[in-house]
Length: 352
Image 1: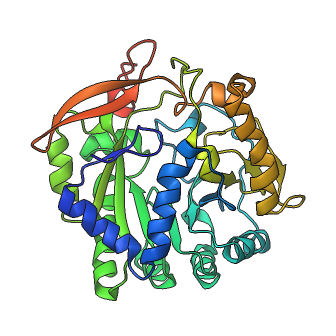
Image 2: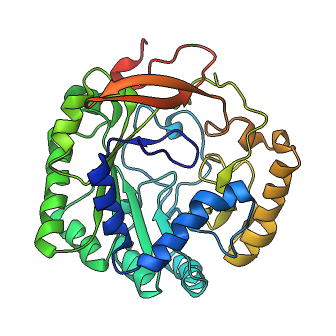
């Protein structure tokens, strides 16, 4: 059982799969990877601020081509609907390379593959010395040409959000079709193996989308991908979280986010940009990390987290509850959100 920094993402990795995936991630950069993992896992608890973020979430697209049932964009105005200009992207990533950034993650509120320069962006990041380049995608725009371009450009990790199987998938990932996306995922694996590149392939799903038969999901995905992760559902339609006023977010010591218009956010969970810290036109990434993010760390450490409207309603900073699961021949003790009332989940799980 492996957990994320905020206790609420889990994987189905066996021990052998875990170490195989760790070896893949560390290949060609073992010392850097081990040091990065030490900082990621221990610096937040030790309250040590690394000289530069360990991870930058970069939103090259705040546009998405689908309307997922569970996604916050269906229930709120995120304030941007843009593609990041290539010159802005290169300015950010050049500094990140010079400062030794380990992970650049194409993610956040939109679909990265919407950007017409995404292959060039991946290649530029690798050319600048970024150790690990991630893409989080819904997979709907993958073609053989695009997939080959990303793989040969050197992308290190691709996560495809793939919630459930069959009609459950289609009830969440609207209007994508299950068989078409599954075929794209298989194509991605085939090309990865044919090209002999080191890219780690990961899928992630909502737990509610597989809870009735998780083994069926595992049996489908294990021959295709290296890693299978699952998350508890986040309810954006109605705020029913139980706040945890004592929570000190480890993300403030690990990562920061930059939107498609170059706005600095404390983390990707500021979906509506309610607390824009600054902009890349006015602050370098290093200045944003030291000064702008420094103020956020001070608020948390001084017990003033509640002054932040973003932190007050963040799922990661809410109370968690332990849940018992029997999956894949294993008894698991996982965590979920401690909602004030029952929340069945998204897609076909919604009672309405």
